[in-house]
Structures are given as structure tokens and as C-alpha cells.
Amino acid sequence: MAAEEKYESHEYDVVVIGAGGAGLRAAIEASAQGVKTALVCKSLLGKAHTVMAEGGIAAALGNVYPEDNWTVHFRDTMRGGKLLNNWRMAQIHAQEAPQRVLELEEWGALFDRTKEGLILQRDFGGHRYARLAHVGDRTGLEMIRTLQQHAVHKGIDVYMECAIQRLLKDGERICGAFGYWRESGKFILFKCKAVVLATGGGGKAWKITSNSWEYTGDGITLALDAGADLIDLEMVQFHPTGMVWPPSVRGILVTEGVRGDGGTLKNSEGQRFMFKYIPEFFKAETAETEREADAWYEDKKNRRTPDLLPRDEVARAINAEVKAGRGTPHGGVYMDIASRRPADYIKRRLPSMYHQFKELADVDITKEPMEVGPTCHYFMGGIRVVPDTTAATVPGLFAAGEVAAGLHGANRLGGNSLSDLVVFGRRAGLYAAEYARAFTGAVTVDTGQLHAIEQELLAPFTTQGGENPFALHTDLQECMQNLVGIIRIEAELKLALDKIANFRQRLQKVHVGGNRQYNPGWHMALDLYSMLTVSEAVTLSAIERKESRGGHTRDDYPKPDPKFGKVNVVVRKKKGQLSVAQELLSEIPEELKKIIEVQQ
Image 1 (cartoon, rainbow, N blue to C red):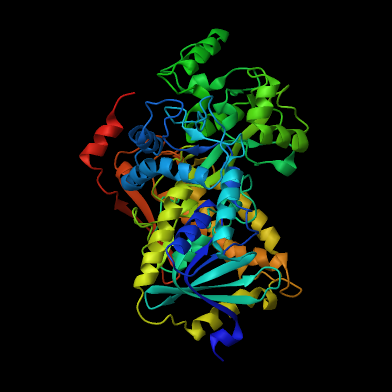
Image 2 (cartoon, rainbow, N blue to C red; image 1 turned 60 degrees about the horizontal axis):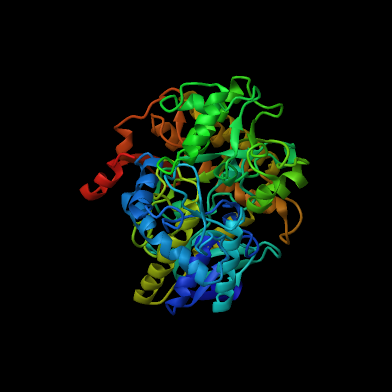
């Protein structure tokens, strides 16, 4: 029986997997290039983690500070990433972000405005100038709304609640994707010339995370299984401010926009503790220091406030305060904006945060401080791509957004995620379309390959082991949270590897009952394959990088090592086994080195 007869089958030039900001922008661009395009998403259209990027989109528009420009944005990004960034990606991003923001405005995005009617921009950690174009604290939601409406208007075919499980290859090149409808459990085949992965990260492998159920590392695993290189996976960003109470909402993101609009971090003793972590700027820890900080914060020549240091630094500081016994009753710290801004200002600038705390925690942030703590948030690492084209190391495979690595280096600055999505989402769609147009020969799919995948995906229904997929997921999350968290040491990382190997054996014994029609146990069993793959890759990479840099902190190697500052940790899959290697970063051109080295 032909594959087309056994499975629901569709044929496209370009299939985009993932419908967040990067996927939507890629699909829009591919379609605009005149190739037949499909957009496939695991959840509902619009249910994307782009929505969590609440504070704004980073672009050197220069509307608030005219002296801002792409070179300053490039410098901030490289320095924030501890120079582990792919310099060419950082250059393209800084140069093209303003154009992409103005494009969103042309397509109907309603940004907050300056008195002169320009797009308003706010401060964020690690950015020298107020650079984040925003819509209150709902910027990601506005971006998704705008892109979604534009994509629907273009008539792009959308497949919702469709989970892609494997990429298909004809020889060395991509020829399709295979997955299933989550509602019916029926399999679906996409034959295509090119695939764009825009599936985000894998935070659901950790217990405390801002990520929702979709974030199981699918795209990273799809690419790895297809033969693509991964880089920088040890660089996992723990956002410093997630909710910590009540337990049911622990990890939900609290936007950096709170601090960007003047919020401060305090420990249980009422101290603004961030002063202690930047002694070169502030020696005192008295009330006078806070007045000094306010004056410094308002100084146009210095856009760094201690509460707005890069995320990796703030997360480590909060972690240190809690471990020292100066945390809140629920294991976080306090973030206070109520004493610094009027209630109407807070409700106008941070409407989502006001409602989030009021409805989920019964806290009125216009009157009392929030309890916050670090939460697993973002993967700086992922699929290795060519900067200009977003092509992976497998012909016909492209990647953009969080699933792709390189732009952010060792630490992502807030707001750079949203501009990353539209800058490289557009490029992914453009070059995937170019590749598809140049594709010669027919798209052929090996039916034997499809049959093998089908058997693999259905195995949990016939396994007799009796392992519960949800119990296994809980154990994995505990392992990653406790052993591969903010602070790491080799002994714990090696213990995590042993546990992950055991989890893999348990996964072979997972059994699910019932039928394939919307079966959450089956969905979890399949997601665990990706989460275990990503967890192993992160842990192996973390063992390999014997230094502390950005989002990767090794307590046994507490300082940066110049040798490791020049290499990517690369993960590949060979004969079913993961391997790691160190490979040199490309040399930064002299003219860009000079930009990075400019003293501020």
C-alpha cells in the first residue's frame, strides 16, 4: 500500500513546524515568495510562547534616545552573551530589527507612543538605552495577533493540534515530516522540499519553568535525529522573576518590564541586595544608596540600574539570597513597584501583571510587593544554523527563533527574543522558499521508514512494563531541577546522566491504556522521548564546558576560562548515541571588534 493511501497525506514546497512569532513570520515570507506553504502547530494557533515576551521587542529605533543605533545594540547583545554569540547573527539582528518592528506597525500592531507619536521604548536589562518597543506588558500577544491575522489573510494552510514526531529524509536531504492529530490520534504525512523548525525550547524538562506543556524540545530532537548539529545547549536561561506562590502558579513569568518601569528587588530584610553584587558601582548598603541608585537610573548617560543587570546575573543573585536565608516565606525575594510608582501608572503600564497577581495570588501589586524567584525560561542553545540563511547542517532544513542557536551566546538579553523571531523568521521563510524553488527531482518518501516510525510511536499501547508516563515526567523534572539547575557541579551532572539513562530504560516500559483518540498519557509518552533527548544533550554539554559563563554556572569552575570563550560545545547523534565536541567560534572581524570594545 502506498504511503499516500495508508496515511492522510499532503504535499507542499515548504512546511513550517511551530506557529509562534518565528514560525508565523517564516510562513508569511515563504508564501510571499510564491511557494506552497503549510504551517503546522502542536497546539492552537496563537497559543505560542511568543505571548510570554511581555515587556517589549528590542530594536534600535532611537525614538527615546536618538543616540541609540545598531552598533550599540550589537555591542549590548555580544557583551550580554559573553562573546559566545555568532557575531554575524548578532550583526544581522541589530541591523534588521528596526525594519521588522516598523513592518509589524504597518501590519497593524498598536504600540505605545511617545508624546510626539513615535513608538515608545522602555528600559530592559543589559540594554544601554531604552530600546524595547512595547504594548503595555502584552507585547508578545500583540505580535502574535498581528502576525496571525496577516498569515490568515494570506491564505496559508494551517494544521492545528498536529504534533510532528519525525522528519523524513531522502538520502541526505529532507523530504517530509510525519506526525499525528492530537484529537484523533490518526497519523499524517507531509511531503515537502524544505522544513522550517520554529518549535521553541524544552523547559518542561524542569520542575519550575515559565514554559507550558508544548515546550518539550520537539524541534531540537527532530533536528538531532535528522543529523543536524546542536550547539550551546548548556546555556539555559533561568529568568530571575517567576511567580513563587501559590504552588499552582509557580514559575509563571513576571515580566522584566516591572523592573524596566522602576521596580526594585529586595530581600526579607528589606535590603536592595543587587547593590552587593556590583560593588564597583555601589559600596554602601544604606538607605542613601537607593537615592544614589535613583539618580544614576535617571542619568541619560548610564542606562544600567542594579536591578536591570543581565538575567543570568540577577538570577544568581536571587538564588544566593534565598540560599543565605534572606528569602521570602515561599522561597523567593520581593519585587516592589508599589512604593515607586502610582497605582494608575502601574495599571496602565503593567496591566497583565496587575491582573495576573490579583487573580492568581490575591496580591495587589499597586499596594504590596510581589514574591518572585528564578524559573527555567529560555534555551540560548539549539540547532546550529548558517547566520544569513538559517540553514541547518542538513540540506532542506532551516530553523529560527528559540530552537535555533547562535544569536544570544551565553545569555539572552530581554527583548531580543521578539526581534530574533521576526528577523530570522523572515530569513528562514525566504531561504527555505529559495531552496524549494531550486529543488530538482521528485519528492519521494520511503514507506519502510514510515512503517518503522509508526510502530515506534504506537509501542506504548502494547508495552507490558507498566511505567506511568506522568510519574516518569515528574522524576525527570526533579532530576533536572536539582542536578542541572542554576548552579552546577560535575558530580551532580554525572549523576543526572545516570538518572537520564535509567529514565530511558523506563520509557521503554511505559504503558498507556485506552485508544489513540485524545489520549494525554500517549502524548506524554511521546513528549518524553524529546525531553529525555534534550535533557541528555544539555547535561553532556554542561559537563563539557568546564567554566562559568552566562547562563551556565559551574560551582567547581566558578570563573570564565578564556579557552572556553572561543568554542561552541557541539552535540551530534551517531548510531543512536549522543556525542559532544568543542569547535572554535568564527573570528570576529576587526571593525566589529572595535565596536564591542568601545567603552561606555
